[in-house]
Length: 64
View 1: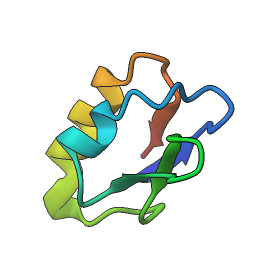
View 2: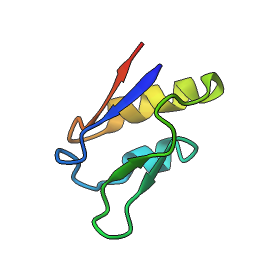
View 3: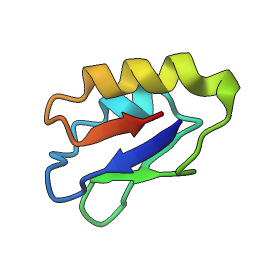
């Protein structure tokens, strides 16, 4: 599983950070998503997939 993040599309809602704080953070300067690891641990897969689905702007996608 590989995270693909489009920071230009991100609106800074923070749903990803709330859902999967092990995999995402927010930039202090603009609030946009920052992936903590492009290939998150398999133990976080369920939370990461939920975060992708909850992203209101569709800025996060996965490649398997």
